[in-house]
View 1: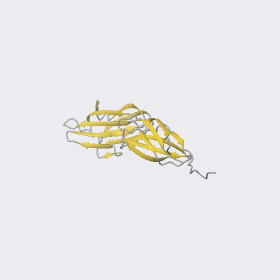
View 2: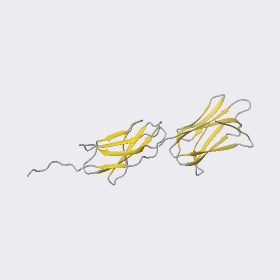
View 3: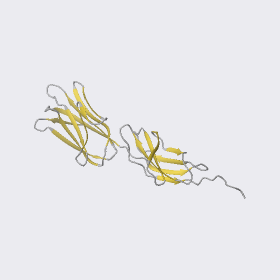
View 4: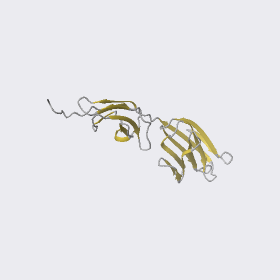
Length: 212
């Protein structure tokens, strides 16, 4: 954690860190409240292009994972498990509201949220089914979404499976058709990048026909 001071002559501090798209960050700014410190904390996350991505201050925060609380002895604003939208150098801007000043402590936690890797799709012997396997590369997902497209069609979500799953069998296939798949991890606030794509082509259905 970083401890600093907001004063009338120095009312804004900035800190930078290297961010990866889809990774999660938790940022907390805590300000004590006593006779010498009256700072009402205000926290802003700025993306690599200089655009505000999210912010948190008392009574007014942006998005479901930003909030602020007054605990009496201290005030805290947080951005919790926010999935970064871009890759590059991010800036954390700290300041106070309404001209108040005082000490604060800033903390940052970055949690990787990597995409599944090495997706492989194969046919199931004797059945019109596709067997998917992949590697789970993150420790904090709630599950995985499996995307599928048929032939030259568009992508759609086929299904989702629980955390730590690394295999799925698709039994809803037609004969003589190409299918492509991709997988991504998700949690309550965002998702990973997509895995690689892989696919199969099912064999034509054969009803036997006449015998001569």
